[in-house]
Length: 621
Image (cartoon, rainbow, N blue to C red; front, side, top):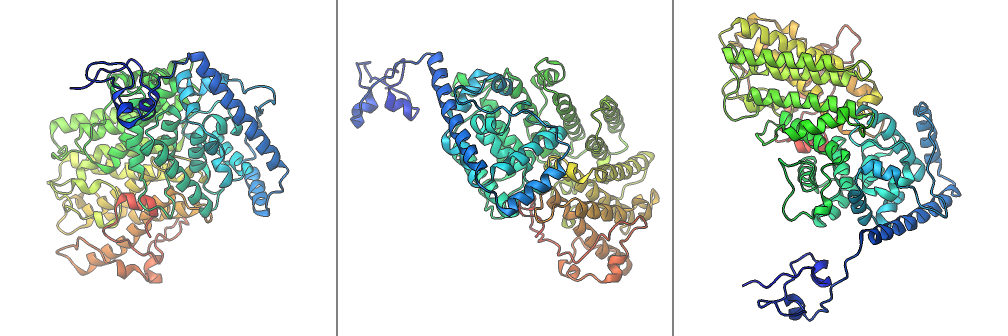
């Protein structure tokens, strides 16, 4: 029989968050646990809210003074030659960044909390962040990245990354000092997301490992939850790039899962997805604008993961998602970047709708080309894509949004390449060894097949053309998790089309010939784009994803050779060793007439056991 629960737990029970019971007969203190362990069973007097606020403000003041003194000491320290060179180069590169007034802490006063409340829109959420802030987190980055480089990286996030994908919109007055005090873990994630091309590989690895360790300590082991931690996980997931020394400490998809669970516990899911019964009410911040953004970003991450991994899940769009989206578009509390974020959310919702209505991620057979219901569904989805594209205002239009629209058209017509056994081969990784899994289609050709295959080919061309028109800085600033996989997906589908119209005993070859597919040209275009957009000595995850395209080019040479030597059957595999030393004349066949670099160099094809998680973590090698 359990004991009678106390109205307020004693200090020993409260410290380890367990139930405090007075005994089976409800006797006086001490409680059962303190009696058994011989502890001092004392109950702390409840603190008033204003006392708690005063304590937190004192903590902020102490941190402010400490950081101010640290900055003064940093200013009197002569930076190294490498730091001076990096700062000079980045100042030149980001010379168009508008100058802003910095809010420096005053020696006799606190930082005004107006921007703090604007950032979190919730005093309870702010209090939770402050409660988890300590001196070590506030200054942990200083031992890894100099103050000057932190400022450059933060400026890059605010004026480049956030301009393209405003997942966490910072208040204009929120500077480096404020973030160090109020949101050190979010600052850590921002440094991790925006550091490519600024930090060396070694320094980036140190920052990444430090962030993974912080998340492991604070979230996985400590069980802490806050809007700041949710935002940090989402920023780190969107611009995920694992360090080279990463040994399965955590993966991108673990980050996604933790963020989803944390958002639910914080009440971001609304009444349809309420927080767990053991979540303290003071942590629930679902009514705030940051919580609404966070819930929609969770949807974006989950939908994108489903589209590329093709694993059945419970990802769905609810009325609460619609309410959050409406708030981003119409609320007076919305930030300037919320209109753009809402466009991206609508685009990802459209992609998820296509996946679900055509059963592309289900174990059941997908839509059959030529059936009346399939034709009506595809026409309806095409209309929705066109409406979403027309909905994009001219001041927000960007090749990234156009790439998303064209990739959605690929999803609509992908089923023309499906067979009864190859459906799962359209999931990541988009590498050569998956091209022949389940065979290739050879249907009885109908006008619907003609239309879908032509539309599919054109959508692939449009996706790659739009994506490759992005500038180097924008490509490396767009979320790695969202943009680069669409390019790889388009190239992979184009290779599938090439097989379908050239393989022995095919039937789709009457619709188009190999030269119309232009696979070699578009692979060369992606390879040239990837080479042009790499940062010297600091490759990001986006370039890792596109490293699969040289492998597709190497496969194409082998495939064309097999077509010449075999007229009856095609091998479902390829020989990695055969491509270790590609002849010059073979490489020259992949040159285009538009001054595109050759698609094939001395590439080593990957181990066939390579999976997508490892590919994102380590690249093709």
